[in-house]
Amino acid sequence: MKMTGKLFGNPGAFFAAGLLGFAFLVTNAATALAEPSGAAARKLAASTAKAPIAVIYPDLAEPYRSVFEQIIAGIEDKAKARVANYAVGSKVDIEELKKTLGKQEVKVVIALGRQAMQIASTLDSNIGVVVGGVITSPSSEMRDIPVNSLSPDPALLFSHLKVLMPGVRRVFAVFDSRQNGWLMRQAKDAARAQGLELLVYEAQDLRGAMRAYQEIFAAAESGRDALWLPQDSTTVEEGSVLPLVLHESWERNIAVFSSSSGYVRRGVLFSLYPDNAGMGRHLAETALEFLSSGDYSEHGMILLRDVLMAVNLRTANHLGLDVSRQQGFGMVFPER
Image (cartoon, rainbow, N blue to C red; front, side):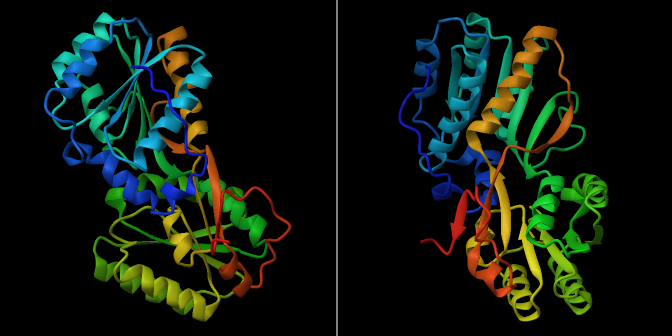
């Protein structure tokens, strides 16, 4: 069951579609591209070799399959050992999977996506669980294990913003507390550490979000203020909110940066997105720590720090920014 094959070297083919799209699929994989009936059981029965680490992930078609391959490659690179992995569809036999994990003497499971996290929550308590590939998780759900979010660490976003625009002093953000209350609490401390003031507006519906953005653009000053778009399905709605934000920011020369790389193609200045192999190595490091000590160094939600950067050169030029000397961009728009 060890996965092999050529990995896609360019993450842009996947992430340009938007990190939120990926998050939707991995968190709703029970209804997406299920394996044919019986295929999962045959896969499980075929694996009998022992492996201390196992990876469970959604059985999705390209380009998502290649993303998981890159993550698993990173896991194996760090683990320096055989890693069993299972692509699960909606018809997976969970009891059969649990039996197979027992036969293989698996000690820790890396679960990618919400469906895999839910499966992992049913495992015996002596099996460690490390979760990755989720945006957020209810505070009461698996709070005692490490849950690695796809949300980039605001500290990294703010530090990149300061490099691009040293004169920025204030950052605005609109968020739904049901999705990102936990994130904004951490973001305020991260902003303060960068010498920034984070001004947040809470909204629980589309109307409230639109009103908040209108207030922000009425108050924002070009060169001094910037707007952050977190991964938030309420306040960063693509049908009406995003067009408004892009139009107003362009007209008023206000920098907008995002936690979702798909928006950079549409005109957002920059974003950070996962380095798939790097994320895999981080997950493996946590799993190895559990194998050696029986515990984790971190618990609860852990922000994404293995990232690459996407930038929109047209927007940078419009804002009067010279990014030609900066290197290391993972993706550049408009595409050349």
